Length: 622
Image (cartoon, rainbow, N blue to C red; front, top):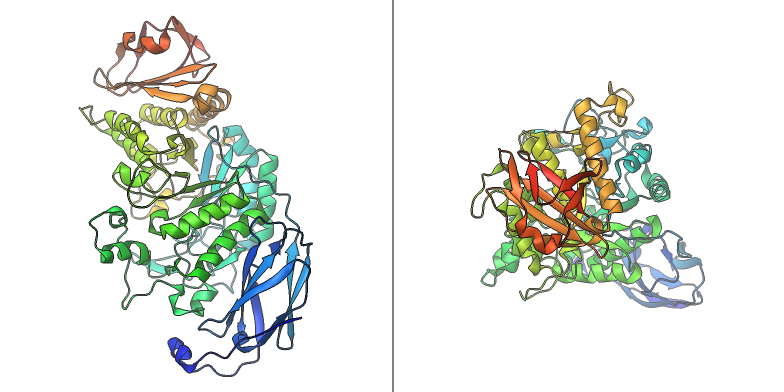
């Protein structure tokens, strides 16, 4: 047996917690990660034990072939105890036995799961949804009296509405029918947060971005078992699953926030300091250290404590949880929230650790940075800016902005549709621009149908650009059925319930019979685009060639693979135009005709193409 004695820590350390620790009976309450696996590529594991007064106990581990204690760590708070293990490649599954004085804690090492992480590729089509606002499959888990927020009320836009994982599972056939191939759910991890006063309204954490227990899926969504069942069911239907990761902060009710392992667990300030929400000081060669720290170490919200990722224990905790989640649940991708506020050394280390264990996993961040070079700075890029990010992709905020401008602004030298053209010109900054995740709206933005004035012609053009340009397209739930609204008076307006997701709903928009004609028209339009993306090698994976906009609003680009050429041509003006096509001769070569992919492969003569106002055609070149 290996015996390792931990000294009682000094009174000076106790004073950091502003009270004298009284003598309590030793009690081990939990260990994080909750269990682990043999056969991981990284043999090292750090277990964080939590329980009253365990820091001063006699600790030992019973011998287990292939596992050894490398070290133990004492920290300021005696309720925490860190054990560093090395697990050899030949170790067999089983239970480790840890002794704390006269208590024995069993810790399970499992065989690797059979869950396969397939990643996201360029032909995928992502569907983003908020589980709480999508569908309620199990009304019995809508609310719990023993949780910090015990309310659920669909009549209140700021409270929980009862949507859950079972509700999402109930509509997998809907996703298949629409043609999406990947589901991105806003965070599912427990958010046992109290309601917070934001703008004079008490609001629930239904969005999921304030974790309170990393190793539990929120029971109002169904818990760990429901999440595992949902992912397995989705995979059987050919649907990949993207999980929302949050490394920058946690909820104020997290157990390790209520009882900090050490003062440096968080980014601490003498007085409360909010982040500036500006990434510029991180990139600015002339920036003050103060501005940099405000960006990275300032808190996102007063009720979202900012984690100090430079602390080795915090870094290990977050990285191991990320690996644990992928291994246990079998997710295919991580979307990383508030990416640019994280410590970049930590993020590079975390990304590398995930790819090391799961080579196919797709990682993309949220960096709402301006101008475009600032966005490119937070992915693998071709710039020399003093630091390098190893992240493969990000949500393409610049594409999102340029589409809105292109459809709402009048044509000009660098205005109107030139905004989209010029955004794509700057793809030279990225190592892999084709891996960017493009979008028209999401849970934090005004809905695109409202932004472009509920103009169905513009809406269809926006959808065509999303589905046929370089990048991996993401659509927001309800966009396919013309859901609309601005974030006025709050973002709850763009997070309304999907009609038909609740048993008491008067209409069911999951079925064609429940949708009005215009809604079915757009649903079928998106479905057709998804089919083109799936079956066309050029659209799905081909290189992109664009031409400068001309004739006061004509914009054309081509997708080309070894076996196919597809042309997309748009008329972003208020008048019908007959477009002469001589400038496209290098692509057309000897081709005289093409087929209109959105109109039954109707034959189109290529010498001149007629386009109505705000019309876009997709043409396969013969």
